[in-house]
Image (cartoon, rainbow, N blue to C red; front, side):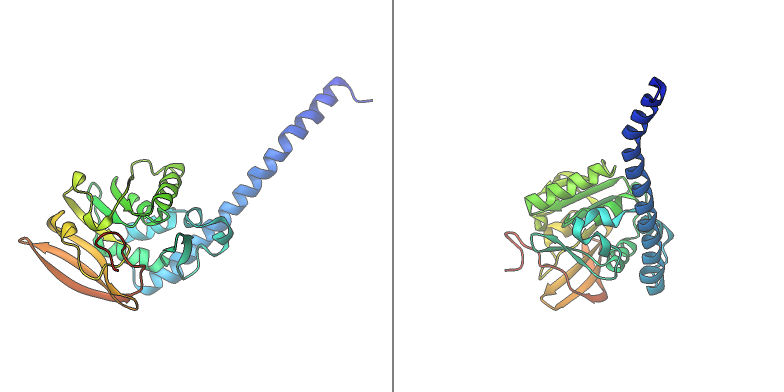
Length: 242
């Protein structure tokens, strides 16, 4: 017969053991994801010429698997985009890093993202500055992205449900703008919302004929620099690609 202390110890073990198992499994799983993130940075990003240390560190820190559907987490760090619902995708890790590096974002700068999606790109930007604004036209997707950002501690990212073509004039001007969906021309409202000397990275074109551009605003005019051919989902909304 167990003593009262023995009964207490057994009861305590029965209560605590499941929690310990969950904790240990979670730590082990997170450790595995950390290894995958490091491998992603080394093989997919550094190996392709991304050298900005702040960008590399941000890609190492942000838990990409938290921004994809649970049944696709095993593929979160692979070298391709993934579906996130509503016909949208989370971009290939290299493209996320490339677009972030092109902006040369500095701490304290104000950045606007068009196309929140899962919230992953906004989280990467939030590792570089605490002034991140992001717009998503699909309400359910935008709310899910905002919830994920809040849950992971990116509470300073401001999310708006609306038409990204029009930008977010309330918080303009922006030092930098990133567009993660493809219009067939550069939206004038976004150019207007850039500061003098500001820059925007944006895919432009239709279907498989898209080019990623760096757009810089000088003396009220824009200068475009080709980066690489890309394939993004089209910009939708009143002024989006029909």
